[in-house]
Image (cartoon, rainbow, N blue to C red; front, side, top):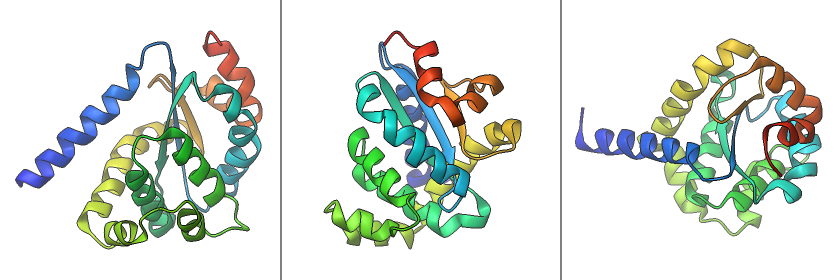
Length: 179
């Protein structure tokens, strides 16, 4: 394995693990597909509605992955990577991009993101590696729910919480947290 691949894997694993240990915050992993109507519905009708009131109490990890929508998912992975750890910007982008009346590229441009970096990422092995990592992270979880989006709390998939989140994200968040 090349030095770059080792570095990438180490950075990804450390970043992913660090998300689980943010003191006092609920970790929420949202595994979704870029063109999936159910994923869109969750982002637009659950996440968008509650995000302003929960944003200081949760750490959201967006995981766009799915073989049928690989180009759109790769684009979203690259945008999220370019945004970096800014949860508000990541959430704004994902909500915009999941509104199918809008274009994900326009959402990124309207946020003032560096489109050259995003384009370079989508055309590179780095962008492919982002999707490979998303696949490794998502596949075991999505195989349990057999549905996207799949919502996971604090790194543990619980079918009841996942399914309830699709219709009452706010209620599940209240049940699992102290806010």
